[in-house]
Length: 404
Length: 90
Image 1 (cartoon, rainbow over the protein chains, first blue to last red):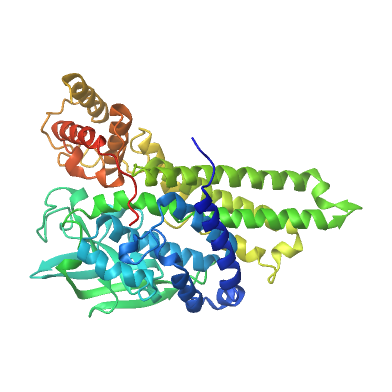
Image 2: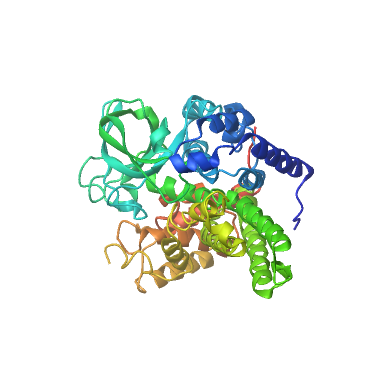
């Protein structure tokens, strides 16, 4: 077992930090205040190759393996002060591009991945609905086959990147309301086979990007609603086979649950360094406040959380590099890393005192940004339920067995 | 998959369907015996019990919908092991 980074990974980390510090996040505070998507920074990310880090070179990407991608995302989180921009990049990669990579046809990959890598197309995942989020099998958006098209009807909410996205991965019901009662399709009879996954472009008639939500943090990632009103999606935009949407979702969500949080490692390290610097220079009662045990222990705990979070995320990166299943590890990572960042951001605010609480010192924004982690991509409560069920406890999350 | 391994599969599934006896070709998910999260649990158990490294894309209900399907799936994975293969980046 080798815990060292390779020379290539070290250089990737160094170059990414240098790029992020010099090119990104200059207007982070203003973009946060205005809830404004940093379009110029997004273009810089495209030029630097960030938007195609895990995408093979033949589709216009950098072709990084999953572990190296994890390391690069950590470096991006460390160097970029705009956590919302990093979150937008992650939604583009793990909410959309990875679905194409894992389940797209050659034609779909060729058509969509290159413009997603070069910044021409922004990707998003339109999953949640007003009445369904983590309960994926309860989705109500329908897709009915009509000749060479599927006709989509329904509303998706809480779509990160939604207001600026050009292409959405959409899960919709092709198997009828109760898994096959209507709409025909391959999934007749099984709730798990009632969903299908589609690539839907925003320029199709009947696709409407409607309301935009205002958030507590990560405000430079726009979040909105997308409505499908008889949207005719070419059958060629079906991902996988009809009725395989739930299997596709399960096979892909482990990427989102882990890789989306690699940037958190960078933020945790940045907050740790800032807290050490402040605790070393700020003097009260005749000594640096870091000399007080109450402050020192907070900082020690920050380091413990950072190193343990890094271990679990790198393990997921390694598993995916080896093409292994990582759902249990990704679920653990999602819970631990997102909650660790909240605790670290909270501790950093405490260590910095008034400077942590006031506008203009970045730390209050770091805390607001951190609070989203245990909520998006499945709340901590849902993740713990999933983990418990994976360990063999039945009924924790899903109630009585279906039909039982 | 050997007969003994097949019996191990039957026993594991039986423990999760209230000790009911499930036929080798019976569709676990169509009968409603188990919930959808059991699919993931089952795949993770297969990986651990039969020491076959699995991928996310193996989470296909077709691979695990019955005792017979699981047997065939494990056999396919074992045959593929000789080929190996990691992330393709080109």
